[in-house]
Image (cartoon, rainbow, N blue to C red):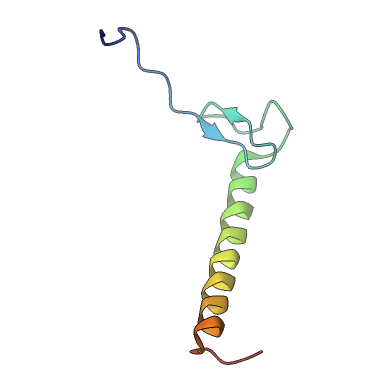
Length: 68
């Protein structure tokens, strides 16, 4: 088998509003009209809360955390 020859594809960003790929310089998603930066910020905040909840749940299940 030969190695494919050609150009390397661009790295794309993911719109957190509609989960469609967009060019990294995109400000407003052409698919859903969402503000890419604001949606990414909101996603990261939600992800941090989810990780904190996961850690708390693990503590409770292991018997090392305080109850509610």
